[in-house]
Length: 131
Image (cartoon, rainbow, N blue to C red; front, side, top):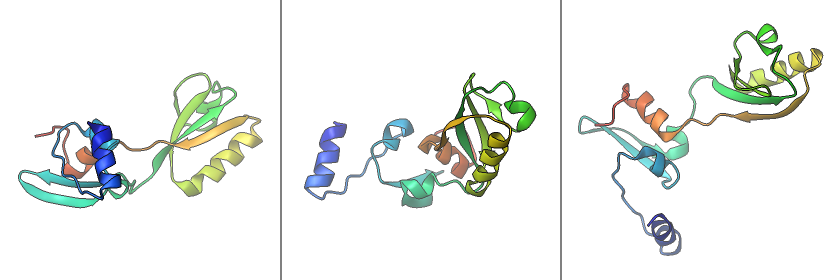
């Protein structure tokens, strides 16, 4: 069904309205979102705008070894022996990289942790229940 809807939207230029509480499914399907709370529209915009981080967001670091990360970066959350995440805005990433390089921590990858549509919905509506 998802493929048919995407094909109709792309090839036929159709706009398709979907009302659903399954936000994980919609996250991969839609390009615009209308959030309704208690029968009133509270926001309508593109999905990337809805999910946009207003404050700091997590960066995931893939490094050679995380054993010393907590002593170097106390705010870091260790995910496994090679990955940690830290709440940082874009401008802070260069500083974190510099700190790690100066401490001889090899960095293999850095990526931004994306907010899900469900997380954005709960943030916008101020709750954790879909009514």
